[in-house]
Image (tube, rainbow, N blue to C red; front, top):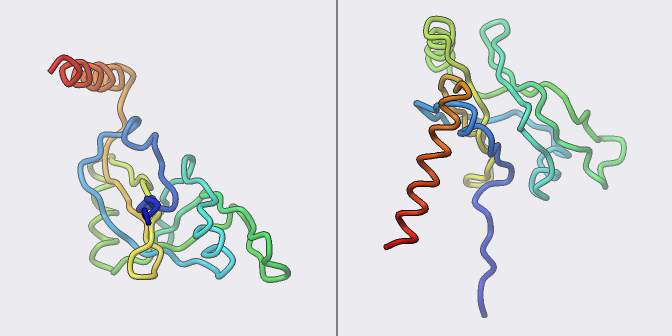
Length: 150
């Protein structure tokens, strides 16, 4: 019997590393409703347009689209609901200071399961301009060509 390879993550933001130079990553918890968890386990949803905001010394994920669970019934959720991120006070204060002083952004990269809990991988970094994106694509193509010639 061959085991089917499962993806280690439920949702991925593939454009995050293309649009941002990620300096640091941080694993955070996310507050979800039951129907959201079931929809995520079915690998439904997207975080391509999602972003992180600070409100009243708390951190929230906005614009993350998790569609309604098909068997949810009356207990279903709103697909674009604001979701609270679970961080301790020291982490929140540090991230708030970095985003304000260094003008860096918190970018959601992946949503995945860890020990039965749904986690979100946040990236802390600066956005790339057009020249940086072209340069990184060129480097990627060069590495690919070198591997082919070897």
